[in-house]
Length: 161
Length: 104
Image: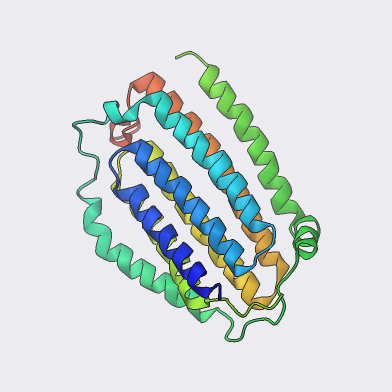
């Protein structure tokens, strides 16, 4: 029953991602990014994934989206970038190459996909155990990097030019 | 809970589309903030692909990897926002084509 909800959420996520790149106003781009994160979180919930929809909402909408939105509003970029060419012309010629990269990426990903689905989904306890047991070092490194990034960001922003 | 509703081809296709759209944003747009958002889209696509694999295989490590990828995305957003604010304060713009100091 949830298959059409999953497809709808994924289509909304892709459309919002196109909006991030295509919209000229940075405020609208950031809003599209927040929408994309929300749609992916809804898709993960429709898939039945534990933990990850909440993390996507917390990290994507709460942290990334709001942080970038506040930055865009602080810089008032819709005025700053007005009248300038916002799209690079030469790299736009690379669009066919990007299409080929996308097709190749999907071929690789599809080749590695399992042909039969598992009968049971992992529950939240199993995910938490995997975070603390199997991926201890990556999680510790990413959390340390997050702490350092916040401190470095504060130092950068507070420093006078 | 059985994973009978998993539409793996469309999920993987959407994940690849997110990665390619993020790459396009990084290549085509001049604003540093949109470049940061492009990287976020790439990371989001990777997290979605990891999650789809994990659900298809019934493996919780893939979901944990998705959590790590989303954490890395948060790190990148913090760094990118600070860079954009600093760049705008020093140069008055976030247009990455105007950063020419290291150009030979």
